[in-house]
Image (cartoon, rainbow, N blue to C red; front, side, top):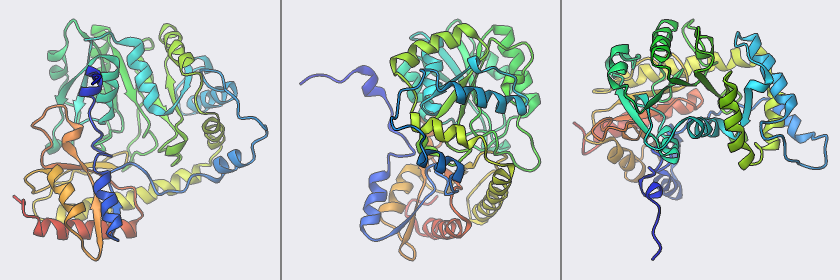
Length: 398
């Protein structure tokens, strides 16, 4: 029998999607499943984006430029300039989601065996992209006890060696909801400058910052214009996950030119997605204000409800719409399977993402889950009630 590749064998399954068969079976049993496992908001996609696709001016859905439509890059450059990120259209590449932006970044900067330092827990697919590039993620533990704040810079420096090519951050963070401060980023920037590394900065949740806190972009770090690579996406900002439109932003011309070769190999980013993404830039501030208040309500309710449950620990997220939650269970993956397959409360159950999939260390996250508070408050209340009832009777409770 023909053999599967080494990369194929070590490629991990998504902790966010791997339990889908259990959820599907629960639905076949007639149960309502509350999906807290995935960052799919139930916020309405802006009408201006839907109308732009509905009223296509052309009769042919054509290829675009490999870097994305010029009109879109012009418009998004103006958008960045308005929020203090001074870039030009030729420093922007439109990608097939933020995922492709990260993959292109790795392919353009990393050789097989190169290393990228990352705080864990981290967005699970980063590991997949590093495997595709033949590189290695080197984890540094962020702790639930201090809300998953950035570890001490000295801890990062201990991990730097001849194979280290960069540091990857997600700000605000998926899966923890932590928002890195300007001071934390500036200290990280000094380390990047000292060792002349890349700083890969995933900023797709930029608009989701709470409690009066402001997002500080890595693009604004002094003296690092050739080192910082920013990843962006329309998926969460405009509740348009299925558009698969992202952006790669960097002032390093050699990097952008290298990424263009990978972009040409995949021809072009999605044409319909670009049309909707460009139109979405006209969404008024009132849309974001409404979304902000909705997420604040959801977050506050969820965190309070979880921390009232015996043995549960949930830090207060400062950004994005996720939290890593510690549960009083023997094994979170076992519990997540059990609650879908063997438990129901009022004919409903809950799907969560086992947090061990967000760590590269095999002994971490075994009693944690990632919860995405992306459901309307009525559904979130039912989900929390169901989770509490499940924890009370779970056979593996500790």
